[in-house]
Each structure stands twice: as C-alpha cells, then as structure tokens.
Image (spheres, rainbow over the protein chains, first blue to last red):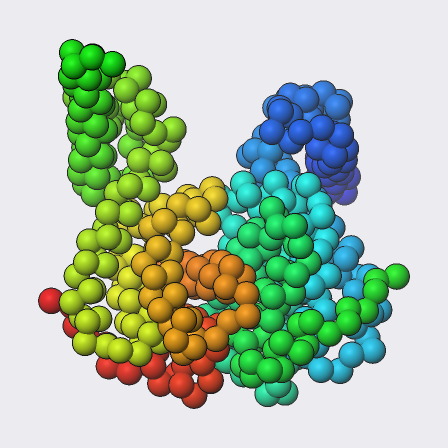
Length: 210
Length: 210
C-alpha cells in the first residue's frame, strides 16, 4: 500500500465514522424527545442528514442503534462510580454499590428500558453494557476468595440474567429502588455470601454519586 | 341469545380452534424437519392447509407460534416429573430435580433453543412455560420455611432470568449438563441454601425419568 492509498482509505474510514456518530447523536436526541416506538429509521436518517441506506451500513435496526447509546451511558456511570468505589475495599460491597447505582440509572432511563424490553438476545449486548464492569469487580473478589463460586461461567451468566430480569420486574413497581436492592441482595447470595451478610450489604446506606 | 345463535357461535369458535390446532401441528412438524430460520409463515399455512391470513388471527410471528408448542412440551415434562417427584419431600430437592430435567430437555430441543434465542421479551412467555411449575414448588418450600427469601417477586424474577440465561450459556458447551447443574446449584443459593447444601443437592445422582 503506498502513501496515497493510505490517505484515501483513512478518509473513507473517517467519513464512515462521522456518519455513524451523526446517526447516534440524532437517534438519541429524537428518542429522548418522543415515543421510541413511533420513530422510524427514516426519521433518524433525516435528522442526522445522512442517506437512508447509510443507516444499514452501521446498524440493522432501531434496536441496534440503541446498543452503543446505552453502552455509553453505562461507561459514563462506571467512570463516575470509580471515584465512589475507590474508598471501598470489600469486593462484595463494591459489587453491591455498582449494582444499586446501575439499576437506578437503568430504571430511570427511557432508552435503557426500551432497549431491555426489546432485546432479542439480551445476553451478549447486555454482557457488554452491564456485565463488563461487574466482571472486573467480580474477578477481584473471586481471586481473593471473598466471592465463592464453583463455576465462574455459570455464576456470571446466572447473575447477569437474574439481575437484568429483576430490573425489568422493577420497571412498573412503585418502589423500584427497593426491588433493585432486593435483587442485589440475591446477587450477593449467588456469590456465596450468607443470608445475613447479603441482606446487610445490599440495604446499607448507599453512598451518593457526585 | 337464542339457541340457534349459540350453536352458530360455537361452530365459529370450534372452527377457529381447529385452524389454530392445524397451524400448531404443521408448524412443529415443519420446524422439526428443517432449519427454523428458513421457514416462512406461508410454508406453515400451506402445510396446515389454511388461508395465509388465518395465521395472523392467531399469531403475530413465527416466534409466537412456537410459544404454545414449547409450553406444551414443558407441561408434558412436568406431568412426567410429577411421578418422580412424588417420592421427594424436600422442596429444595424437588426444585433441583425439576430444574435439572427441565434444563436437559431444553438444551436438547431445537425448538426450545430457537425460542429462547429469539425471545424479544423472554420474561412473560418463559414465566408461563418454565416459571409456572417451579413457582408451585417454590411456594411450598417458602411456606414451610425451607426456602428463605425476603422479597418473593425479586427472588422469582432473579431465579428465572438467571436460570434461563445460564441455560442459554450451556447451548454451546461440550458438557451442557454440567453447566445446567451448576446453574441449579446457584438457584438453590438464591433460595437461601448454604454453599455446601446447594452443592450437594444440585449434583447428587439424578433420578431417571420413566
């Protein structure tokens, strides 16, 4: 490949990334302004000022365009959580505080709710969006022996599926935070904590996010 | 309503139920003979010898037609399990044996696998197909204090979502039965069993179904 081709390739690539970013920004803005169900792909491409076909170079559906948006929210929350969690040393407490704050963000956000309710295969995308952070915290707790599981793969998929399903059951609850915390309590049991300790850690005073 | 109208109504109703039954039988037969992804609604209505539009009076999609089929399988398994479970008195053991056999049936069946992988909202349909039976066994254990949870709704949705997600993680495992049993072990922790007891009950010799 000579220098000229490299420049041309990277220009194409840059343009493609720019189109993708414009679609994401337009989609999020539209979806926060009116009912997601009523928004068409054409509404999104018109708002983004890109060709209708360009959408399908990047995403297969309205659902797929939401994945990077909610994933970005999870990453942003994780960054903010890092400060809060830096003061904690117990991996069980770290997972509980993460799970409780993540749950509060998810049930409060229309885009997250829609994505979870329309996830055809929640596992993989959600693994990326939610599971990645908890995986890191889990690994630390597992290595030190604070979190006890016999089969890490089974425990991870069980905890993730259980957590997400419990969050979804909180969507229509009057006291969604209570349901989230009860779900986190159960998650701690999955990770081997005793009934009494899981209860205490899941319901103790939750440090506030700055 | 006079007698004649009643007869007419019930004839319409009978015919509707007959159409539905023929669609279900044709769909199951087709889906067991070739790749589900390649089967169209038209393939199903032709095999069932019903009008194309009739399909949509009963089902919205290929996914929806699978729900009563897999639900029927779960019911049939449950009936067979009843005999086996009649000898057991411990609700934790009953749930473990149910969960292990149900999991083995699900991972071995193409229709079940496809349904779970394409479930847009797994919660409700799966609650009907899987959760109903375990709910009954759970209630018994909960009333006697053998199974200990603080929030029944949270524990039920967590256990169901976790169990299903763990089953799905078993689809591509060499030793799917091992993964299922590990998932059942975690489910028993969710229901308040100690680490040691959950392990013992989930992995003890599994009674064979007649």
